[in-house]
Every structure is written in structure tokens, then in C-alpha cells.
Amino acid sequence: MPTPLDPRKKPTSVKIHVSNGTGVDITWADGHASHYEFAYLREECPCATCNDERGKKESFKTLAPGFASSPVLPMFKPKPRAHAATQVGNYAIQISFTDGHSTGIYSYDYLRSICPCAECAKAFRAATAR
Ligand SMILES: [Zn+2]
Ligand SMILES: [Zn+2]
Image 1 (cartoon, helix red, strand yellow):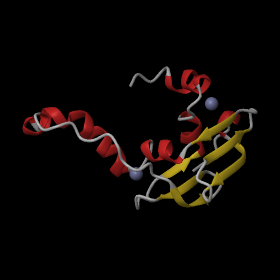
Image 2 (cartoon, rainbow, N blue to C red):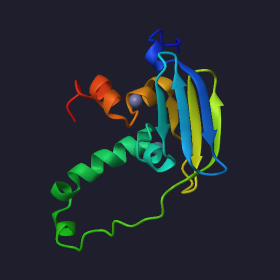
Image 3 (cartoon, helix red, strand yellow):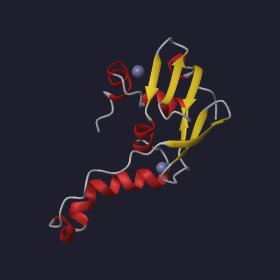
Image 4 (spheres, helix red, strand yellow):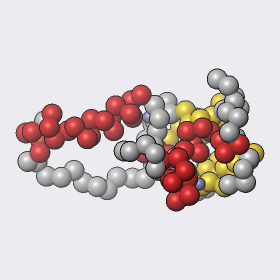
């Protein structure tokens, strides 16, 4: 995988705070700093399984009308945290979550595009209607 040339997607500093659970801090070559909570990263997990699940949730009611009448699933669930994280080459990080999930590999390209700040939402997510 080629290293992206876009300085906005090139990290100059990556800090993964596994032990205190505060999340991931990345500073990018364009000077921007991003902070990601582990729970947020878990939700945005890019692996095929999670992509599938996100798709299923959206079509759940139409595919299983019998379930639509059952009570709404409780919204509370323990916030997933990370129990381990490793850098994959120089292009991504892999995070093992406390819910046992560890197949998500977050490329820096992807991480920059899911930066939770308003500026990046505008720069990277406005064009893609979701
Ligand atoms: Zn996943
Ligand atoms: Zn940002």
C-alpha cells in the first residue's frame, strides 16, 4: 500500500493511550491534531464484519418485521475500551477492544477521514452523502 502523499493523511505523531483509556491522539503533517475515543473507533471499525453489521442495523426493520414490535433494544452497553494496540507498518494501527474485537485495522488515511472535529467533517465527509 503506497504511503499517501496528502500531508493531511500523514501522521507526524501517534499516541495510543491504552493504559488510561483516553483514546488515540494523532498529529498530522499539516499541523492538525485529532483525538479519538476508543468507543468512537470501535463504532467506526472498518473491518468487513462491522461494515456488515452497520448495514444490517439499517435494514433490520424491513428484513425482520416481527422484531419491529419488540421493545427497543436497551441503549446502554459498556463502553468498549482498548486493551492493546499496535502499529501496522507505517500506514495503520490495529486495536484490540475489551469486547474481544480486534480485526479492525485503522489506516491513517481512514483515521483522518473520520476525525471527529467539525473542520474534518466538512473537509472529508461533506462530499459523501451518508
Ligand atoms: Zn470490526
Ligand atoms: Zn479534525
